[in-house]
Length: 239
Image 1 (tube, helix red, strand yellow):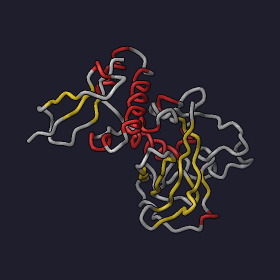
Image 2: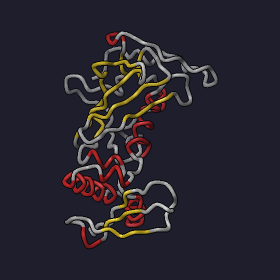
Image 3: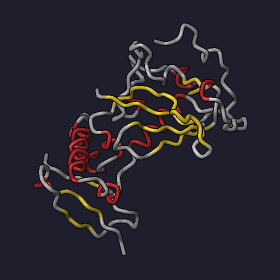
Image 4: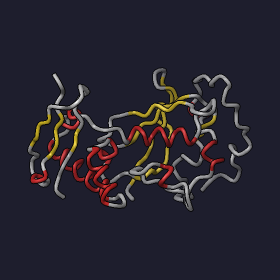
């Protein structure tokens, strides 16, 4: 029997949702579709690193003492409140968000995400309502790069939410997520783009509510696990 998709009706944006049932949907679990009416170091150790040949065998994931792991300054939490030099509002793809006046160069994007280099790592987004982890693997290089991390985070954040995930949240939280969803698609330019994104429904990034700004990464207290490899924590902040 086909699965059913649930949407909010336009007349119930501010109150408990009323449900409309559609039976001609694919067999995958239903997605939520709301329809409301409404300072760097003096010496950068990464710049002198040669770019490995893309066809080499990927690096293995080793166990390193935590004190020996260094996160690329481009990704790390700012020290002493100094300027990062770039910013990223994670509502938008990094390619559209900061590869510009305050963006990152292709050289920076190709730098290793951490030292020692690794072919895989895990990112945990620090937010009480975000339970998902981000598994990052090396892309065009033998090691995980800055670009790999940013793209991995973006794609994890922008996965669509299934109805059972949404229903697992308390009612008050669902209302907050719905408000974040409406705010997000209304940030797009043009009514056509807004309507298209609106029809895609709730995404994981909406669970961050108003804390969708990339504030940098730190090593998790237990920076290595057998299952997840090196684990970094991504701090989020308000715009």
